[in-house]
Length: 578
Image (cartoon, rainbow, N blue to C red; front, side, top):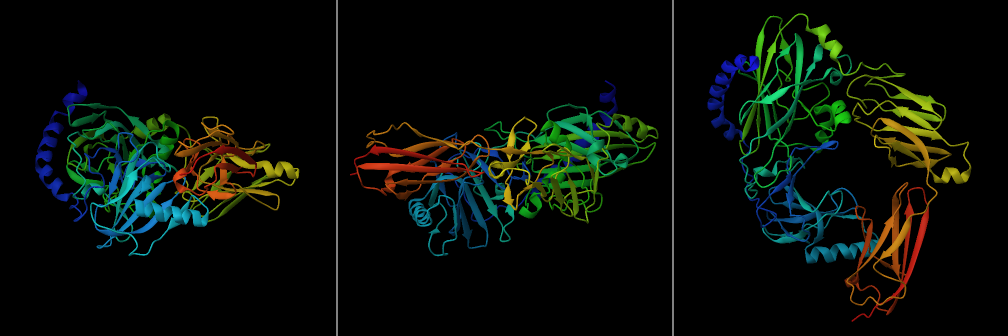
């Protein structure tokens, strides 16, 4: 009741502010990109939108649902030509890049297959190079398409969490734009953004790490559009953070918001707008969010203030940086207006009272003290450290702020602090394997021990009896051994079986330790293209390739893991080829 009574005047003030500003907000939205239509000829439903906070990056496009279906036609959204084709096990999987007359680009990713002429061209190149993964840059006049022409079919290839189409629009400088600004992307959305949680950061108390001072801020929903936090009593400088998401009418996926604005006692103080994000800036997502909080809770809180070494252009606050200066004895109201692309809004009201005695009180509430470690790391110098058989090299400007890292070695395990700080550059780990037998050295690798008790293989280079790896995360690393070859078995095919009616041949491959590195398949000694899907552990050969015409067909599959263990699988089957 006390909080409600305190904010009756504030709610009236906000209603007046909303009435004055709502009309101008829509005028600020990006203009539609002329000439761009829809990549799917069906109602568009989003599973992911532009600017969402993802693992180590901002999402650069739209994820369009296909109701888990594979093979839905995909169309060019503007006149143009195919300038790039990429096929990969991970990342975008099978992806097409179209260049358009105005210098813009569109990207269509996670495809199952391409349009027939493109598919034939890609497969021809795959057989010529004898590889599934490749990247091609066709001549400008080789594959030209008009807006609305078929270019491929939706799939689940690459690092996709389920069947969908990832669609991007990039400007002439290859910077991703928010595709919702294009005329052809129509998504029904009448739902307001949701405020999940709030945090605040007494910046004055931070030494090297503002995130160590972060505290949860209780919040409740007052009505359909307004949230109210508990009062903050503090003096000095202060930053706020919010866990936010947005949803559209046709799906409950938790997507990103479009704009966040801050108003201190009614005056504009901060703005972030997700309309254009360059790939060079995307890596600063770990600086933009509360990385330490995410590492322990897996919840992404957006810091509503600009810290040093964070140049991302979506933050538009040259004067204030979103940092609040709270004077003793003064009262403030901070209004945070959260807007989705279609103009739906939610507002957070934060009452702040300036007091004298709060500093010591907050210090006692800090989540954990700053840890003084064995190694001081400063931004301008490359740092080298060694102990036992380990040596590490930390490049200059690896960390956003100076750090004191706790680093120890026990037996063959390197304890490289905790995953509380994001890295801008990779740290090189070297391990001296002089003591190993040649056999042990050949089977060894550097692995990271995850918080879930799993071992994650790190790309390990071996030379002169050294194991080397460049890692992008702090944590615990150790030496592991993989002496077990990969497993290979045919799916639904037996030795000597007639399989004339089968359109595809499927082989299952797996390596539970260091992971699959490479594979090669032949029929009667001829290379055949088998597509690898690491999610299903399947290698698939399409008999329409018609590489071998003999009735008796001898399949041989060789698979290598990441330390060089190899396995060979052989199978003889019979097939009548028409």
